[in-house]
Image (cartoon, rainbow, N blue to C red; front, side, top):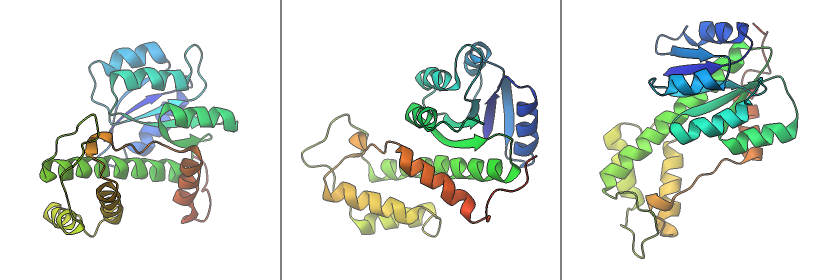
Length: 216
């Protein structure tokens, strides 16, 4: 995964880069202290995940994320902050972030959040593969009679992709069943983030570790 880190505290990108690049598959392709450099860099960089500070001089992290989504809608966002204000956090989720990483930086938290976002990216790619195999191009409106795809057909596609035993395959089956029952096409399928859901999702990520670990 390619990462880009935005934080006006120069120590934060250094700490995060050290944690992220312990995994050989991760590369921090750039860092910035604010919006201007970030937007300029993204014009020529391939980025999968951005880690963005919430409060920065000038353009806030929330506003920056909104701007980046206009340029690169496929980028996933994780917000870094020591702010606990629930309204600000809700605004961040509405802007499109997937998780918060709290300051001071915690090694376990960073690794777990990055792993979850990486899994989400991989699942989205698998859904795109399924869509292409089903043969239906995305359309902007619902069709009266969208192509019928049975649970057995979707399961056969999952087997073809070799992911029937992976986490999330049951979710794909459930989504496809709902789409079939409600006659929804891929083109109008929307899974918008829910603030409460995302908060609970974050809590569940760390419950298996028995609470937060020591900060860096």
